[in-house]
Length: 505
Image (cartoon, rainbow, N blue to C red):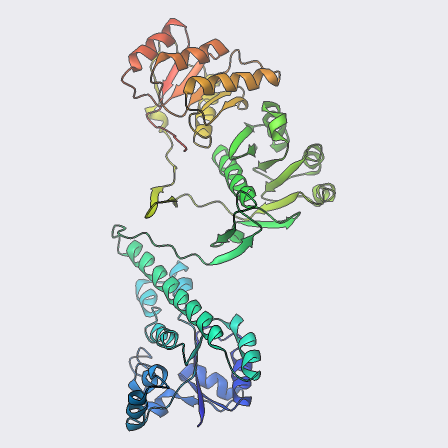
């Protein structure tokens, strides 16, 4: 009995080589119009589907494979007597290999020049149907959806046949392929039609496997397109924890802007600053907590030059990330063989969502991108902030959304002096920030402080006053705001309300 393979591909990578190998193995190649044309030009004796179905491609190719002869040849069960009789009665022959990939919907939808008609036309109909039919009947049929599958498939075919185990793996990959494709379509149309989200859909393919997760006994992998944002071009393999800290550090420098630096350890800033340049910013950030900075992740906002590279080399750091590095800087930085050097390729997305798994599903929220409107900043005390204090207050509050709650951060001259993070009590966060500052020889007198949420009692504010701060920024909104304001006035300090909370759990 003659053997048949059907090919209908949008991505024609490696397809000529694949079809030639099938022909050598005595398969008759069946193909759709454009694919058949390319194969024939390469000297492959392919048969157009329309000549087998005796029905032309119609509606500009919208209908070409949707025919009982094609789907019957894929779906009939080769060991079922009734199926065999029906196939013979209807002149249906078995098609044992299906090679299909889909219209480039994702690429088309991402193109800003694509109008709605073009996007809709790139929703494949016959392709997913062929894929699902073949995957459903994987007991007898092999389905290939990715050019990377071709070589190993041909190798196994040459060894005497494709195993059921391989067909199962191909079927699973096929269902994942169409699922991912449909998710892209649903997400795109939801956005284009401006309809509210009713389902949480993710369409991320596995990008690479990590050595382990947060701990060595946990497996982990990255899904999506991480490497479209970052290029890891030197050092050891990046880890799960590295990625979390890397993203945290870059988010801070993007928020702080030009000539900024963030040093992150365990997802909290050990120091952050804005300077006259990135070198100055790094020196100021490092002063906050040089002990915790050891083994940390450093992000700077502009190019790393030789001067900054020399300073960075003085401390053990896990990662240095920047938009670019000068050749002279790299000559120095390459001397640390294991330290990762990473280039930030583009800005991080600002309209994404964050989610975490919970029993039965996920909990989803918008990214915390809200910033206060300067016109809504409200000084609630008798004493008004100086221009310098106001600039430091804004810097300090910008940092609070990047620090684990409860958060208190002390700042002076746009540099962190002490960071208190992740405590159950805001008073304890203030105490820890003060202790860290004193340990590092930093004077909090004349500093400003920010809190990520309101003070439920005056005790948190009074602790900050005792530390030497002269101005405080906080969201406000407590039922005891008046009590807290009175305490601020009594101690002759400035307090500004933002109306915005920055919890980070």
